[in-house]
Image (cartoon, rainbow, N blue to C red; front, side, top):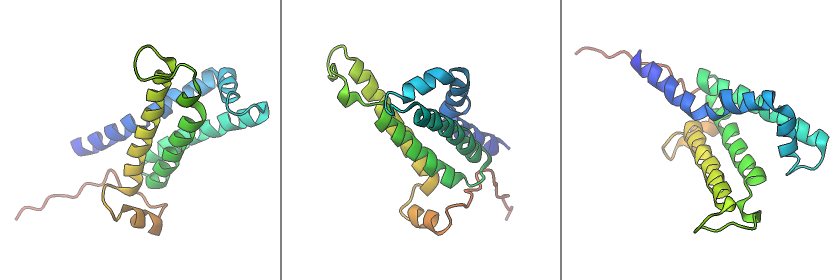
Length: 157
């Protein structure tokens, strides 16, 4: 039972940014989320569609990871989502005050950019596993579950 709780806890930590926090923020601050999306996508209708799709990705993929249902594919999708949001909304290179030493708003955005990529790495580990065969295992059955809560019974000799 403890191993199941730990597995669930680790998965909860991995998705906590999205479910509940980012998804809830999109609900509570929908107009502000659209305004933020419009910084990268100047079309209001497209920005709104991106926020709605982002909400769906955050909720559905997080639930898939928590339940273990098609969790590897969900992790791959969330990895792509993290990379896309880093490139679209964490553009440290475009800020005029980006520097590594001294005060810099650009450096703060740079760290957020790197955190998105690090989170994507965690999701990719979940999708592919930690060994060299992971990509081929995933490719052979991308909808398979990793069965995160299965526990083998120990046999007494």
